[in-house]
Image 1 (cartoon, one colour):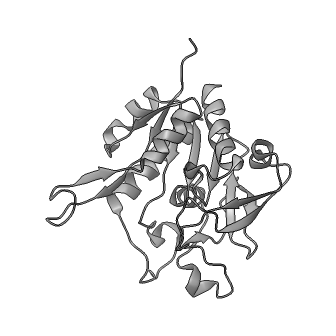
Image 2 (tube, rainbow, N blue to C red):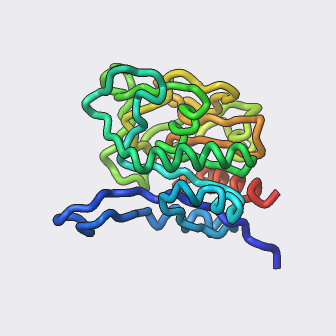
Length: 240
């Protein structure tokens, strides 16, 4: 039997409080992420935040999935001296994911960044972010949908000649949307592969790596064939 590639997944993190799941620090992850990896032929493996074990993690895994979450990257990392009041920082997670993604790229592991994961990949390559879309893009669509994420919110245009287009085999797709930040300036070596109608960047990729893809929406919900294709292509690259 052919070995299923192992995909390291970064969970979310909360410091804990008496009125939450636990009074002690805890991890959380939507089941959908693991389901999407398994459905595409991979083996999901959660990676706790132990920076000293990143080299060991890299030896164990074939690919990395940087997930979304209810937190933001510190604006200092992309040169902003101010921090919008809507920005939520989670230093423990940001530090771990930053070092993990950097090491994964150094070892040319397949890497997929979803929502905040895409934004991290962009900042890691020297790009910057819109800290709060409603404050900076007054004509933007609603990128924080109020209807369930199992339903699409808006269309995106997928650019021909990109990895995303090759996998999706279409120039348009309907996607869900749950983010208040977006890419402002694109990091070096990255190319935009998808846009929303309002100009918000919906996807990036790095053609200099085996597989380095970021998408702003949440394809783990599998609301379209394009969503499934993102994971299928990711797992196929992790196998190579």
